[in-house]
Amino acid sequence: MTEVPENELFEIGIEHLKDVEVFPFHLYVYNPSKKAYNLYLEANIPLTEQKITFIQYIIQRKGKLAISKKQQLTFLEHMELEQSDIPSLKTEEIEEQVTKPNIVIDFDFEDEFIEADKLNNHMRLIQTMREEVLVFSQKMNHTVSLARYFAENLATEDNLINRTVALSYFLAKESDFTDTKSLADIIVASYLFHLGYTQMDMKLSSSPQILMGDRMAHEHKKHLGLSQHLIKKSGINISVRCKKIINEHHERTSGDGYPNSKTKYQIEPLALILGCSSHLIEFSMGKIDGREQMILPLIKLLERGERKPGLEVDFGENLMENLISIVKSEFSEEAA
Image (cartoon, rainbow, N blue to C red; front, side, top):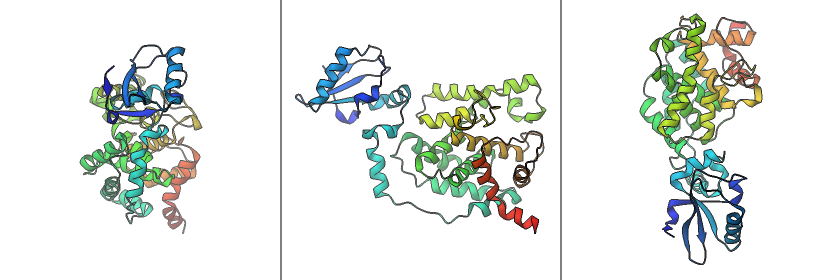
């Protein structure tokens, strides 16, 4: 059998194969007596009990089971695993965290957000997000590396997408998602979640949403599936959670969202954050009811429990509390 260089593979445990019998990836084994990795089971060939017994035999004698690094994404998605679930894929991340200190930028999000909304200029928020992301380790995983690339090359002007990315990023931090992977997941998701609009009639992405008729509203919802299709077709390597954020950003805790009418804890928390951020930014820029307006009054309506046509509130109690607390100084000043 052809030997495969060790640096082209990553080790897994037999438990990572779960109870699946057929895989869309190859399995390699390290034979300690020959001190070499060889292809053991090709993709789409059943893993029989006899083959499992042989793998167990090899492992008991200090052998190893491995997957090609080229098939890493396929493996993780098919087995429904995260990169952090595989010890051999966590080595670089641990080393990077030990050797690279955190860089803290002096920045008060509450004050900056209020100022940005009053001036209708979010560039300071966008630039600060960009500076913080550019210190992320590129070696952690593909999604983190992509977050850095997007921030460096796209977060250079004040527009709807960059406003959504920045608000999602800082709301995630306010909600205690401060680890690099989580922040990278929501950044990449915020840049890709409306990718489907590129395949639709421009009227669907530019028309105020509450003014759409039933037929147009139905067509508008298709942007979600188109985004998923384009991401899958492109082969872009992003985390499972990042894809969940994109797929679930229109879900609402009440169960009135789409595509699967999920409720409360069934929804990825970062998807609710992206959904809330994009909704507020789109509302402020006239994408919901056709009228541009400040975000602060919208949050005040949420705080008072008042309804406004097109204004959604079902993003979860914790997120709403964090959102309202951001502008608490404004509320107190108004009351005084």
